[in-house]
Length: 159
Image (cartoon, rainbow, N blue to C red; front, top):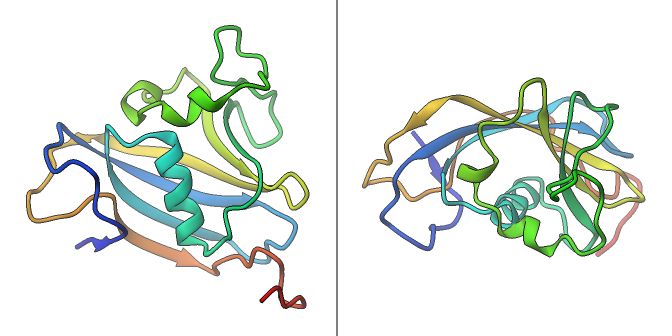
């Protein structure tokens, strides 16, 4: 059973991806944290970024980016024609999941947030595309495990 995030803009969807999202790095990461969502294939990377930040209760006021790599420390490939970093990457946030998946062989999708704190989330698609269920509002959380990271750590009060 899914717990609703926010209703998706469109109720008619062709399919659903199940995504596992794991926080794999960050200045204040103290313990493993992972969640699984079901998301429409039309969801954009920008909307996915918003969902990730919403899940971890981060402010969302820092620079962020998506990239591909063979592993957490692997060479980064950006979503540009030549795979190199481009200062003007606003178009990346408009890419739909259906364009991103399937990933190239041996590549993983990463979401990087806040250069100073280096928060990194590894995003994996689980299984095949499934059909949406009319009674469920997507995207929705399927499961959550571990200790939710704190954007600014335990010792600082940013309120």
